[in-house]
Amino acid sequence: MSAVGRMLVILGVFLIIAGIGLSLAPRIPWLGRLPGDIVIKREGFTFYFPLATCILLSLVLSLLARIFNR
Image 1: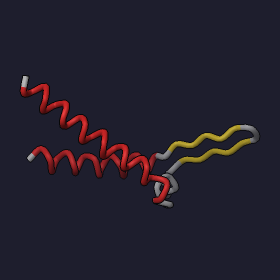
Image 2: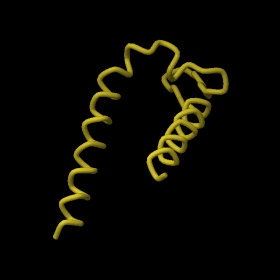
Image 3: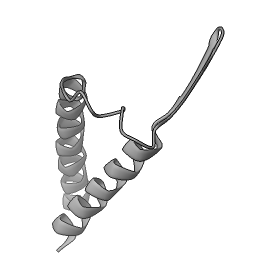
Image 4: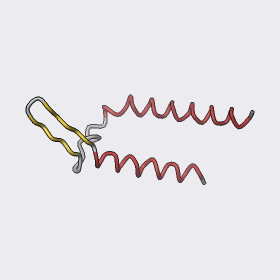
């Protein structure tokens, strides 16, 4: 049963960090507007795919996961 409790604590910490990140994300002006983010604007239609932002977040999260797994 202790494994389930540990997993719930880790999940709770992750949710807290995600919540703080989401609340602070609008204060970072360059996040989502990096070179490499794809934006297509047409009449009545806008397609936005943050490719560079996804790659950057993936690198940061991979580094954090690697640090915490050691």
